[in-house]
Length: 129
Image (cartoon, rainbow, N blue to C red; front, side):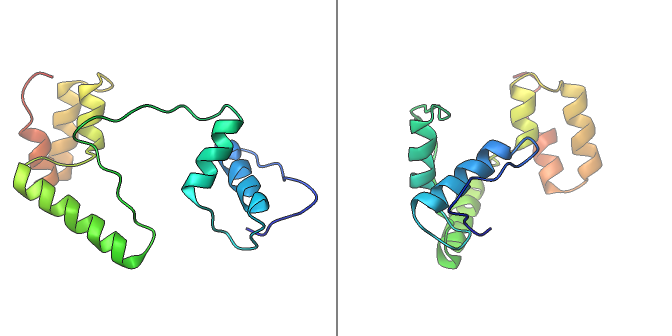
């Protein structure tokens, strides 16, 4: 995406605000390439009232994946954590089930369709939330 010094373009669709904010960050930083820093994006979103922040508690980790080396480090961290704890990290089906977005029958149906170790981990979740 190239910056345009005269205006911020209009983008249709559900991600329009994110794209416009990224465009504004690029303009603010006077960058001509499609790169932005998350901190700068958060700052602009905060100033515009579009950012809602919440303090995260124990058990959460923010992993930098901005370089090849940090992406490998993040993957190693996730694999090690899952192997040692016997839990999956960011398992969207489990999250949906725990939040009541899908029921146990739907969860089991998804697990059976997967037919792999990930599906087995879904099947092994406790019967109730």
